[in-house]
Length: 238
Image (tube, rainbow, N blue to C red; front, side):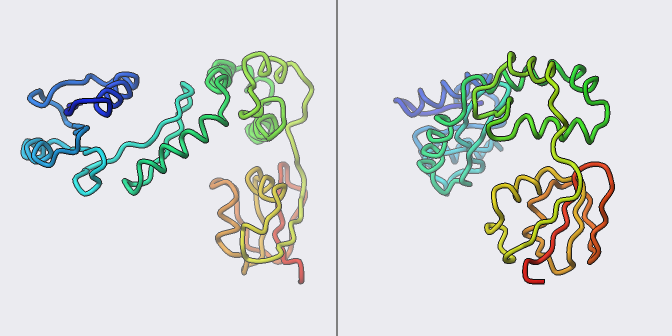
């Protein structure tokens, strides 16, 4: 990665690039990407003439690509991008999110990866395993990712007797076509369900709140009894 420019802006870019594992070189070296930290248009032109893609700091009109603001909890990475609209906004969001995300989030992710075999052994059925993980990672639960859970909580979760989570048929009566009118519980259940029976006039915006791999069945007659969590979406004024 080519980096040009001087001063604190260039130093900050260098720190971020090196932290990400990039090999930082000068303008005359070979690279596919470049960051022009001082936004100099002449430097951008020279680099582009060599077929190099350029990011020019504070010059979105000169950028071939943009860089997101990063919250790093290795191996978890949260990227906030604005498509070059406002680096300041991305930075402000990054600072707010960084304050919310516990330092132990990376430890939680690494432990879940390490214990994949134990998790599969504990819940051999894939649907049961997904519901168990969803329930454990829910707000206020033992593995709440914003609650500071780490390796010890994963061990207690695996040794415990928690059920896989909610199962059976749940009826949600929609108050409007606006997904923002869903309660927190309804939105959470939609995100966990295995299949959805829904009226044909239920808006796609509401169905999109469910997992992409949840089965969607347009039906005016709810069909319960299948294993896992089934949602029946209907209208409250029907």
